[in-house]
Amino acid sequence: MDLITPEFGLVFWTLITFLVLLFILRKFAWNPILGAVSEREEGIKDALASAEKARQEMENLQADNERILQEARAEREAMLKDAREMKAKMIADAKDEAQSQASKMIQQAQAAIESEKKAAMAELKSHVAGLSIEIAEKVVRDELSNKDKQLKLVENMLGETTLN
Amino acid sequence: MTLSTFKRLALTVLFLSVSLVGFARDSKEGGDDEKFDPKEMILHHVKDAYGMHVATLNQGKENEFHITIPLPVIVYTDKGLTTFSSSAFHHDYHGHEIVERNRQRFVNVHEKVYVMDDGASEVTFDAEGHPTNAHRPTFDLSITRNVFMMWVSIAVLLLIFLSAARRYKKSDDYVPSGIASFVEPLIVFVRDEIARPMIGEHKYKKYMPYLLTIFFFIWINNIFGLIPILNGANVSGNIAFTFTLAAITFIITTFSGNKHYWQHIFWMPGVPVPMKIFLMPIEIIGMFVKPISLMIRLFANITAGHVIILALMSLIFVFKTEAMAPVSVAFSLFITVIEIVVTAIQAYIFTILSALYFGMATEEAHH
Image (cartoon, rainbow over all chains, first blue to last red; front, side):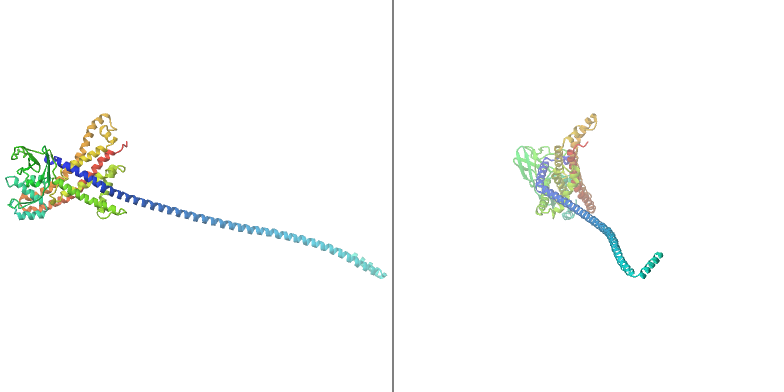
């Protein structure tokens, strides 16, 4: 029975000892140690979080770069396409222009040739007419100077007329 | 007992169980017959005592010599406070040695101080061995063996943890070094395996100092109880010690109890009214049974360990032959190894159950 009866003295000293121990350890050991441990854990957590954030940022940056590159590529593609189109158009336009210009010039040339020809013909005709008259005048004058010759002329002319 | 002094000494050193031999011989003194009484020896060992008796040399001879650390006896009686050294009893605990102090006469009967009634010149005993003409003092606040060992244990605890805490102050990056790297896993274990799961993430911080203190206080006293040269002081196997710690746990639980906790005790929600009335006394009993179970579990486990080891050692003296020694040593070594595990387990169980009770007291309603 003695064994299972708490002695007052030991209860008293246990209580005081324990409370003193609790007080000292709490103030000088548990609080500093737990504080340090949790601070370190916070630090680790923060470090991990910031590393994760940095990784995320890196990824974002990479994605941005990729996107910008993509855009640049697309732009270049578009520009090249535009240029090609423009080139083709210019060539086509120039061709058309040249064609029309050429045909116009040809037409003008033809028209000029025609008019020149006409003028030349007209001039030629008037020349020929003048010449003919002159020749005719000379011939007539000559021919009419003697009788024989007049007759011959008439004959020739009659012969020619028959031929016609 | 035919062992010569030399052989006894050799055995004593060999088995590191100094106290055992001392008590074994002491017990012989009391009785008239030469019979060794293991029960008396064991009970004397597991109970408290005035003075730290380490060994007795030259037992029963003229030059008998006790290696003892005397401790103060402090008693408060109707005549006031009286203090004297335990060495005044001259290692007597059968009420023979009468110490006169402060006009009172004190005797030590089975490691309990008695004040002799006026006029009595010799202590007389009844059939059960209780003194008939002496009484216990009003308060016996003696620094007994257990109190002394408890103080040694807290000195060691303070040495360990204050120097560990200083390590953290020194380093700016909070990296544990030296002793801190040894105690930190234990502290983190108490926090992450005991306090957090049992009490909950939001409230555990408040209870951490208490849980850490009881864990290490119980553990180190359990360990000290296993060291034979310290006379196997049975601090954590003393009911007064476990009673005090269990009472503190009970007080903290009761004062932490929230509305939800008290409602569960007095008016269990979610059951019909007759059931509520039926459950109320059970819950009220349960409130007290919890700390009582804490008290008995620690006391019984540690005391049982001591009793087994001592009983195995007693076999040598019961059979009165050294041939028994290897068997006793082998078995008690085996039990001691188990006891080393038990020291940690019992500290853990006491702490985790305390944390569980705090958790129950502070749990929020979630129906």
